Image (cartoon, rainbow, N blue to C red; front, side):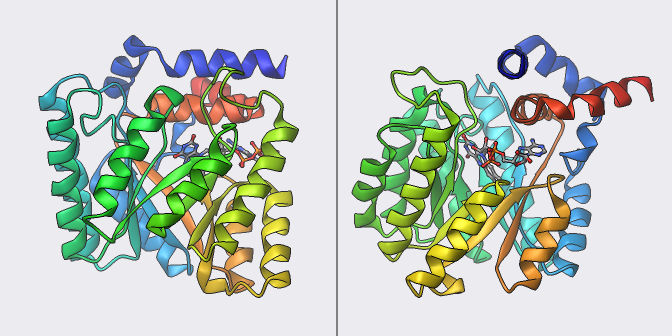
Length: 304
Ligand code: FDA
């Protein structure tokens, strides 16, 4: 049943008609729990509140199914405006983005131009930018662009997904770039030809790549709500004398918020991934897919 619900929400997340319609509806169905708001001002307010509590942030201007150069340029402008707001308001926040929003599916020229514009602005304000990892069909392209950009900019990192069979080898290959990486389990529906279908295998592989990347001496963001993974990382760091300055924990806005503060109190850097913007539908559906128990928020939202 749980798997069925998961597949159902992942299926819904890819529906272009609903994605379009949701932009007009405004934040609904309990999506406010996971999305900071629709405007840059909403994002600034939420980042400031989190910063006050000792939490650092990575902000994401949401975007799905960008198909034209004009749309990609508009999304790029929004990300640049977000960076300007972080700089102007002196907030402690990085930026996260999806390269499909910036034109990765349109052409190499569009994506490279938009990414360089974003990274130039980010550099001006000393802001780090993480390229989120999308589905497997974009995996190799994302890594290829990341390597190119990393040789031009220090302030860029990306994400690797533990569910991929190849990830341990890929992380070793990337070691030549000493990259700052966010490690996650993986959020998309992938074929068993490329990704572990069983959760227990994903969890084991996740531990394996956390260990490889940390022992290679690279900065590592462990982005997971899974307590077993957090405990594993803490123990690993203790055993190998890995300083707290070499890694951080990350979780999504609205998920396990009490735990965010506890980890800060324990002396760890804790970063909250805060999405905002009117393109909230796909992101929201992926969160429901991760935890169908959250569906009752949707039902509550519908009857409000
Ligand atoms: P897992 O799914 O095993 O969950 C462990 C426990 O956490 C659950 O039992 C539950 O208690 C709690 N939990 C998990 N999800 C929840 C939810 N939605 N609501 C309430 N509780 C929940 N993926 C990707 O493919 N590319 C990317 O770029 C990113 N980026 C990213 C950034 C950050 C900061 C985070 C935290 C995650 C991502 N992800 C991602 C998503 C990631 O791949 C994965 O899908 C989710 O984090 C869920 O996996 P967990 O590691 O949390 O464990």
